[in-house]
Length: 191
Image 1 (cartoon, rainbow, N blue to C red):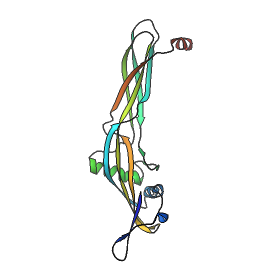
Image 2: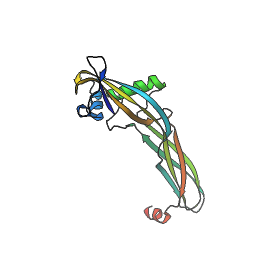
Image 3: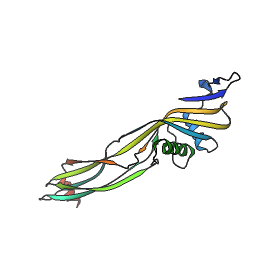
Image 4: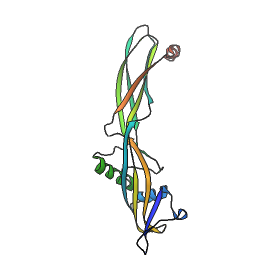
């Protein structure tokens, strides 16, 4: 939702009509231009487990039980709900990161990569696939933009209910191992 504030002669704020309004994307791109003073006001923060992703696998096509070490690596970045690129270098991202730091007492992590290994004991003809899911943080709030001269007729604009999702500050990943039946004939032919 986009709202503009303009002081009227009688002291009550005037609200922009729908046809006068720029899009959320246009406003937030202006925030990234550094010509506009931008603030982010967080209203909600939640932490939850993200989607599982296949991250590594190992198999045993021998005649005896073996222990395989399955190495995995996964990266999770930051995304926003309005489709405007958000990063630490741009005004929109700087305003967001500052407000998260002040409001919640931790630095925003724009991207996290986790690399680890899992030792799995496999019986003959058995395979194991490693699935990983990052712990994510989602912060929702409102952007307040102050323009140096009227923009679509107003100096101050608000973009409400913007959500930004990224890695939780703890860089915690949930790891799940699932067994599968490998195609040992194909693996032997490929070797």
